[in-house]
Length: 285
Length: 220
Image (cartoon, rainbow over all chains, first blue to last red; front, side, top):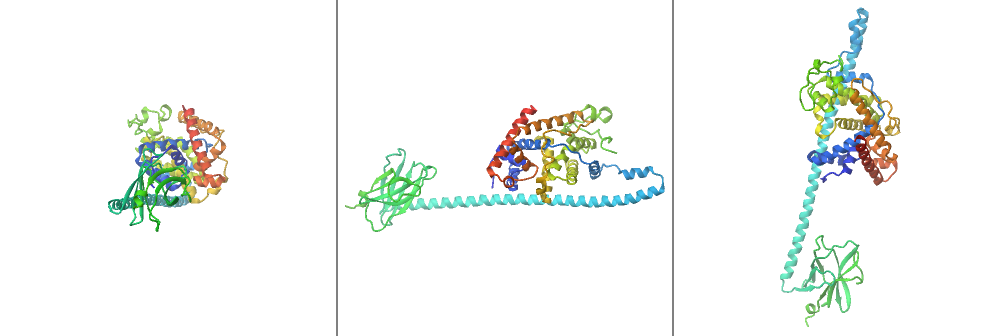
């Protein structure tokens, strides 16, 4: 939910009011704490406000001025009251008094209405504050969720590292270097534990693929290549791939890693990336 | 008692906070062109005459903006009253460091009007009203005898904006109008115009960029 710095496009969208309300509030929250973004928003608001300058000018009725005066407490008495002061006739005074009573009633009603409007404005402020708090809570929940996911990923990686180390330290495991004909900076090893039917392929310096192809690992058994699955390196070019060996097979001549179509191929067709000779490791003779 | 005859000018302050001479030594309306920021500083000191000048200077702009959004003179006048009462009771809401007073004022009016529009659910009615759309002709600009310089500046700015808007493609103007005056979001504009969302975003982005560029050139 947290947003990074605001760019001009977002500031423009906010200024003209085209953003969703929730995103608008995030922009406001961010702008409250970030001076450069606040300045950017102000520039956009100035441009957006210019739209109003292009409108055909209209004037409100004169009574608006009087209403404003009265509302802020600087208004002069109304026309009826001023006329009443100049009319000596008692009848006129009486009629004006009636009018004043009526006007007073209207003013009272208007005051009540104004009080309700102020109350509504206060409620709106409370609603806004509550909404802001909800946004903050949602932001914190999102952060918590992200942290939990990151913790889970780290725990999974640590468990994988421990299993690999355990296999390496085992008397039953064997290690073979994987040679690479194409990736000059890449390093790779195969760690093999026949008692657990487990095989690890660990390598560094493999480029993550962006062309829709996948790395696929194969073992060669008497001239037949059998797939052990596909893998993808992480963003740093590191891979630790664990797979189980098919049962009922005692030895392989070699293992290779090839580039195949996305998701893996049924038969090996792509170029080799790593090649490993396993005959010495898997054939006791 | 009226705004113009109110003698409360002795407390009027300039923008840097210096006290100005009392009314006897200073004809406020005729000889000095007070900036909006100076007037707002004076309003913060409860200076009635400063408030009167601000009111006269911007009441038509405020009303026109509210009327464009609400399409009702009655509701627009309510917004005018509310906004100016707010200026008097909470002048500190305007922070000069964050931009021009006029831009802030228009934003306040626009936002308040859109809130009112949404509350009343009269958006559909707003959509069919086109009489007071962005005006290319510049008719009916006010000329305030008491503030000829301020009125002339406002009028000139309006002409500049109209020239800038005139150069915008109609689709971009329409998208900006629907967002700003009808209070529609991207998605709502896209649905209204039966256009893809990306197209609407592009129109708004390019419209604002052109406006900004054109205004900079015009006002320069």
